[in-house]
Length: 79
Image (cartoon, rainbow, N blue to C red; front, top):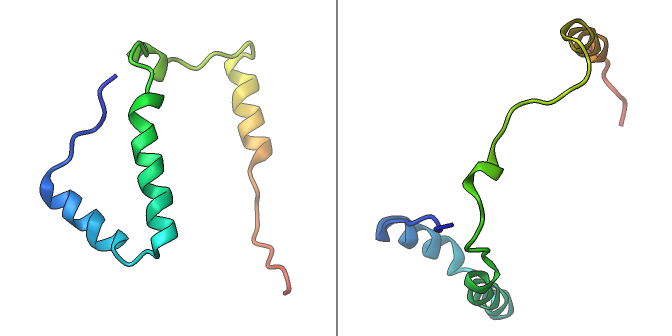
């Protein structure tokens, strides 16, 4: 699976955000970025990223569960 390609403008925005990190944090980030290409599974199936809802309950049971899980009212807790 291919990674996300970003423009130089976006990379510059990330760099502007990360430039303020201390040296140890930058080194850890560099190490993680160096490891990331090796960690990718090139044989990943795109179809595994999405799918349909699977459930043994009937439509009515699912709707009832959703309704039962709703919270009615507003309860404010003290600190």
